[in-house]
Image 1: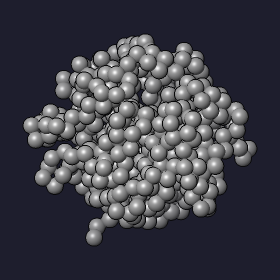
Image 2 (image 1 turned 180 degrees about the vertical axis):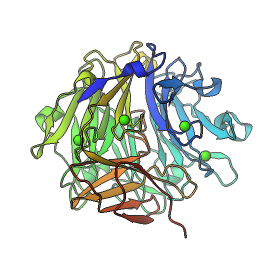
Image 3 (image 1 turned 135 degrees about the vertical axis):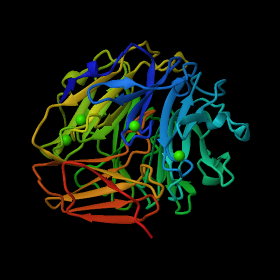
Length: 463
Ligand SMILES: [Ca+2]
Ligand SMILES: [Ca+2]
Ligand SMILES: [Ca+2]
Ligand SMILES: [Ca+2]
């Protein structure tokens, strides 16, 4: 499936990299890739038309940080995405180093967590993942931090412009060994939250409609109490009643939880897919634009794995160059970096968190593309009422009478956030009958017969 093109990354040195997000850092309307560094600098990789070049200034590079996870979202409703960077200088429990919440004013970035009005809000508990969550659906996001050894946290901006921890108010302030997080409307018509825990039951938080949550992992069949959950991605499988959950495990069985009518989940991973391994991240994306997602497992020190929907079932398929048998994978993202309508795959390696979890050693990033083909495609970018990417929105595409569903990523895999675009491969279809965009507040917009072969921006509907 994949061909290596890492040479397109300028100055790609061995380093301890962890999470990655895809967001417009410099405000020119095109997305950059932001790669965290553990005891090394963060990178802001910008596509200049032929290469990815680091444009991070000293503040965002934050070379003294121990960055693990990252997520972007518009916290203050100015239409630009802020960046939350989770630092973890140890594996669990209390930590020394606080997190960063970078916001851009004009051309200048500053760390909101370092401002006097937010003193006392520093996060001093180790953690792994962070996702953006618009729990009220009003277009202003909070960041959920999956803590390890302390309660989950939810950083939101109050009406007075101060950061506050709304986790207790939302009912998600549970204590676990938080790993991967996924936030999208997959249980209710508002943004719900799934959290993997390592060595304890997972959390499944259902939005009650008012931005508060009930935890229902056990009754829905995804608690998986003795499980080493690490990473999670939403899957649109043929015949699924809603988004499925692909859950990767660290030295445990992999799960493909498929949602049944009634809302319960059943694990449909066959022995080949569930085979234990050191999975660090998972991605569901249509890499070859045939109209069906592939399932990518990024492993740490073992060959990666890829499954495709072939002959009415999931089958292991050839990864090509992305096998990476010695890759110490940490995070991975998809984005169409060069704008040709096919997704690239960027894999981070290294780790180093507290020296645990298999340790790590510096490795360069790796970048993969796929071969050109004649399959059609359509990419959809819904915007919030403020003009920022509407992370957590859900887009349904109907082509040749068949429906596909994608979410606009608010955080998934492990430590990462994919590009905020609903990417549809169309196979041999040459037209799309209908697109439906559903925002986190339940607002919908229908686009009949949209043009294909392009990135379609869909603004929030006017009053
Ligand atoms: Ca940009
Ligand atoms: Ca903003
Ligand atoms: Ca595919
Ligand atoms: Ca591409």
